[in-house]
Image (cartoon, rainbow, N blue to C red; front, top):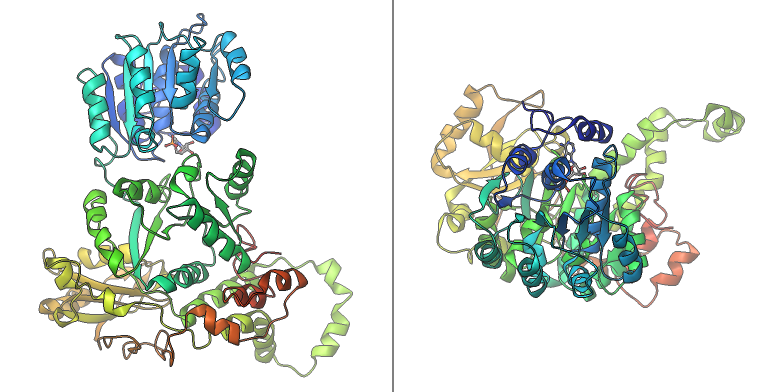
Length: 619
Ligand code: AMP
């Protein structure tokens, strides 16, 4: 494998990279760095966010920059202030052992005089947002005559955000002989036309396939009715106690509303959108970055500057209007080699939007059931038990209290004690989700509106056999891994896979019924192992169709036992009192807002979720 040294970078840059913990170049760095060092030809790079593209364009520039000259030699354009600042910080880190190299970020919403003062001192690399860059050019404060490199980072986003005129202007006034480096995650027509009009026979490189999503991300969708959208969102958060996620909304208003509801319901959430002041946005982003915030509800534009690598989920509360935005949203997870899940919550009507996205990301969405109350309780309970298991006991402090504690608990055996301690936390969850309705819009999940191609067929129960498999979430199984496992058995070429249901210790999947016997024998023959467990697959009873249908015969009641009425979670909650509200919660909970009951009841159960990042119930 090539090292940074093999790519032609000098010792001082490599030393800085070592300080940052960069051991080996990423794919895009492997392709871009030697190309830009060796050639003045323009470069068009397909690169997702999170693939290391900042270093891919900055390192070869730093390798060639003339530190003895104070002329501006490189301009890097980025869509947002946050991204510009992040790129400048990265470049300053990369160049810390390069004497005399200066890099500054220029962006709107901050004093232009201050930025001019810095530019006057001589800055070789300027990272700017398009608007502020044009402003500085017009004021003749940013001199472009000596520019050798112009980088367009996230070109698609800059165009999405309406910076076409600014880009045209900058591209027109920069010297002909400069090298233009264009980086984009997607290549809609507008980006192609920039490349056509302003670039000279660019070399094309890519990490991953053009316009494709990251391989590390699996895509799931949940079908619910409009009025259950928010309740489904909460269940997704509840079934994943360690969730660390951006929830994307389409408008500032929707963003604020969802965040307000989550906060009111006791989740550790906040909003990020353009109506907030810069100081407010900075504060929210900081909290999210350092994981004191677990759920960030954001618009596409506002979330752009966030550099967070370890999101567990990206949730599309509503799908974006522009298909390309989905790639950007989902690219927020599955970064730096980690796995991630991108979730779309859709109504029956919105389901048609999934197909065009699938074409772009080159992957299929997996139909997933909104978790039942039982599944949520089970996950939360296991999380609680893990916490009890891992808690550090402060022996010195607790010792003095133990005699009186033992005295009070005398007569209770081990089993009784465990049950009682766990119930302190668990009862609130249990009663909250008691008789929780099925939120899945099962009529719509059948896929009748997904066209007459194989997708439609594959969700048609008539053609599918339902299988039980003895592994589940606890074995680190997710829909993507299950599909991989099925494919590994080579049952048949392009076999149709239907609904997948992952539960904690076991799961279900549907496959083309024509291959029922082959499926069973493939799993038996292969003596299949998964995460150290011997895999067992059996045919099981189909789920009954329609609302209120029970689970398969294997199901232990979770997800069935459906409602007598069609209450949303909120309505049910407001009838099920209990819990000891704290005064803070009482204040915010009024007005009969159905959502408020949750926060009140669960405000007692601070230890659900995790300590970090969660502390998920406020207060
Ligand atoms: P970027 O796509 O430039 O935003 O980079 C995504 C993340 O990967 C950032 O946190 C970088 O610091 C990190 N990164 C980039 N290149 C490397 C590398 N070669 N080794 C380790 N981490 C890297």
